Image 1 (tube, rainbow, N blue to C red):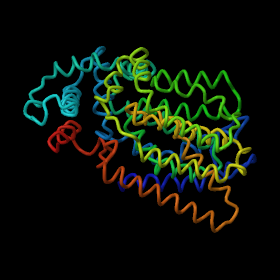
Image 2: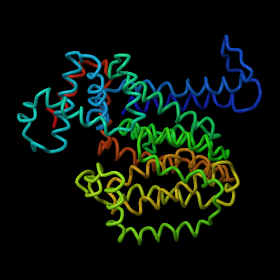
Image 3: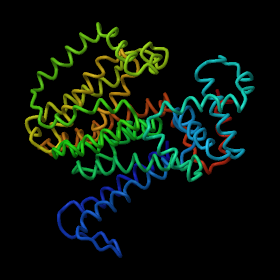
Image 4: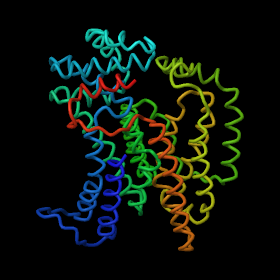
Length: 427
């Protein structure tokens, strides 16, 4: 956890130092030697954005074996694609087999019989992932095939996806927020950063949708839907972001939002047969999810509580902020998040949809808190909010190890195969 704390602290410090120097539309003191451009301010903003995300980028791209989906889906899936055009090295084959062993254990195919799991063959691993990688979005497959064409190591997949996620997130912060240091801090303590370490393809889609919010706010219809189409190519669930273009202009009073959420909670109790049929019709490969075989079927109390708290905060300052850029958009997105979570006791893994609508929390919360006029109350509200999120992230990440991001391990810290094998031994 110390690695994450240091990277977050460095990123926040860099944001505090660099952003004030490029926020005004005038020449700044940030020196970028050798650059000549008709719009030097934009180049400086881009440069400072890249500098600020570097600490988190290093931590994110150097990770190995972190995030359940990394060894369950992405690393072996990429190696399966790569093996179609070139022979894998001995280390890569061992990585593929170790990932397969971990997947078999997680699926409880042999219960806790570790010896039976270790008796699995490399040929079985190839067969599993040749049929499995096709389930990822076409956009993500194209990215993998490009890297495979270059015969890139699997670590380059982690670097490339990390750069995409953080590049889009920090661009969104720099474009949409006037408080990037706070937004960066909340990006980590709202767990968005840790989610991105795990659900890689989906969080690329989430980050694209987050960036597309600036196009929705500026009413650039064509470009907004181009970005959403790209997001859908990475993860099909991004299709839920299609109506978001209309949210900035949607004027609905907070009390009606409460009624909408309450109504959603009521109808969710009777909607399972219809939702199940739609899933079987549109995406039959997700039948195990809708039947609760994968992921369970419990109401997401924690996520709902967080969204409700953000709703109360946004409502408290609604009259002050409703005409500010992005305020109405982010407020309405949070309402959509609550409506979505109303079905969490009915539709398994609905929290995956919540990721799209709740992602702007780390942009919205700093904006709402800044609307408090009294300086002492503003500082107290900031402090209390940070402490509450830190407590939640401590329990989720440090105690429960959600997303499998602890202990941190970098690819250069010893043999990569042994690290994966040691995970099975710990189990």
